[in-house]
Image (cartoon, rainbow, N blue to C red):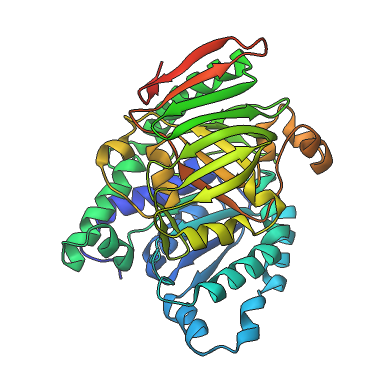
Length: 412
């Protein structure tokens, strides 16, 4: 049963946008859907809209917070080095047969904050390794996929701690609906206009063909070399199966692939990173030859260093994204403790795996060719925020000339 604090009409519009705009689900196409049990009301609405759009089969997988905690409280130690590889192999097989992928986020970001961080890290690594066959289909943009959010009560109480449960859920629901552009009468048209605006920025950047971006601001002087043959993306994109979709709802970014070996300088985070139950704040790192050689954080430093030691690619960048400080999510002033939202409040970089679609002709490049052009490979892809109203960005041309891209956090 949907909480009375959540507007049912707007929740239904979110489900419709997820299917029609996020996935652009095609008649006869199957859909694989993952969600926390708290999001079951949205799962049901999405299934209904998917079948109305002609879906062949909708298969949901639900995760439960109490079951997740039971593992940490009662499972034998060896459990934390295991993952359901058979499930992810099945998902990869489904994606290879053109099944669309939709993920609903909405669980408690701090669920594992009281658990043994060593076990959390081991479980995450085992899961990342098992998930790789499926993740490669997503990162390679083989199929149309999408992520949306549901205002779970535990998440809502974290974001709005001074409110009772109903008040917190109502506020988070309203924030999600606003950021996802479903609080108007015609959200599909609103998304068409938004995608058009993002395409203008994307096309300008692709026309400039910068060799690097230089970020300068408090605690930051970072030059991010861009991969050879990189291509900027933003808003709607075409997957390898030919379907145009919006992978993230909401989205305010245009993004591309850095060169894994050509990042130099130092950078400081401008917003906290919520990662697997830990808040990592005041991150400061230094890059040499594309690799993080020094990393500090005022809070969560031990967890940050565990993340960086995941594999060789975890200390290199897989994405750089531009978001104006005046984005609706930034203007809301809300820290969502969820990357889907927080990354759309600020320019950001991502540690780890790159996206194949961020290369010219990326749909035809092999993994070896992507690596040769500077694309990074890793088990992780973790975004963290480095933009603010005090950060400037210049595009660096191949001849060394500079072009203003952002001034004081806004498009120049």
